[in-house]
Length: 71
Image (cartoon, rainbow, N blue to C red):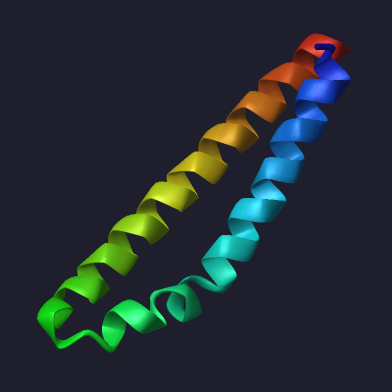
């Protein structure tokens, strides 16, 4: 895999991750309606949010490194 292809895959991954972040509340709606999980879903949402943001940040850092290598 070339550098251009790696950058493209990471950027595509970030687009997908951003879509997940935008819809995270909706995706957890079914869990919120379960009374057995009351109070846990907010913590789960915060965990997912932090994990995905960290993943996006890591991807962005790698993209920057690859772009520097490309020059």
